[in-house]
Length: 302
Ligand code: ADP
Ligand code: MG
Ligand code: MG
Image 1 (cartoon, rainbow, N blue to C red):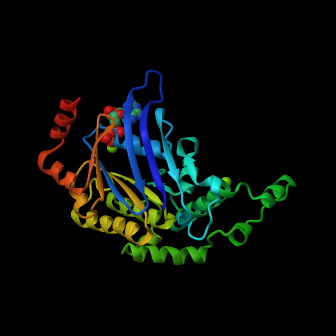
Image 2: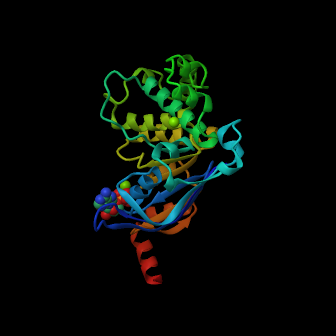
């Protein structure tokens, strides 16, 4: 079971005189748990998720983000003792992803002619490759070959490196689409071209199913979805948790999706801080009373 631990996180915009945005974010998300991070617009929710991902627009001024791994996190792969705790802030975005943190892919511009299948297979293999390197160091043989100036044969990646080949990937994709109750026609679609907003959100859940992260951070995956699509996406998120044991940090402004994806824990952000945490009943309270009562409670106490 993996634990993502955010402690006293403070951050500012990485510019001269950049604004301080986060002023003390504390969160702990474990595999298999669903957390909702809620708060009014501008409270710092997206900034938190971008900093977890390693977005260069922000500078962390205090606090830390740790990832603790246990032996069951990567299937049969044994994790070396000295590779169980990671300081995420010292890692590149792709390294964070390789260790099991998922943040919806930053969509490049629409890429004509790249099928989603190829895109996802490449992403999965890159993750597997990077993870091995982080946990066990460089592959010596490969390095020696590179130093000796040998060209790596294009076949090698598919055969020797434990990478997922085309046929194996097709099977995996089919399995995951069944798990998420998705239409197989989806598979033939080009990466982003012509996807509706709702389809992009479903695609994000599919990406998470393929990459099997320990923790997935989903920022406003509910925004702009009609009720049918919201239910489909919610079903997918629940499957990630129930079938793969993924921990979910669900960032949302609205309570609506929480009717379908029931959180174990709810956290409220205000002015760059997590000011209140509770169980699912906290979300219902927000639904009834809005955010103002939290603000009053917090600032009266101060
Ligand atoms: P939320 O997701 O909760 O709506 P954000 O994290 O997007 O809030 O933004 C929090 C505050 O920080 C907002 O006032 C926003 O304008 C500001 N902010 C976020 N990113 C930047 C940036 N790169 N440059 C300047 N201001 C930013
Ligand atoms: Mg936001
Ligand atoms: Mg590498």
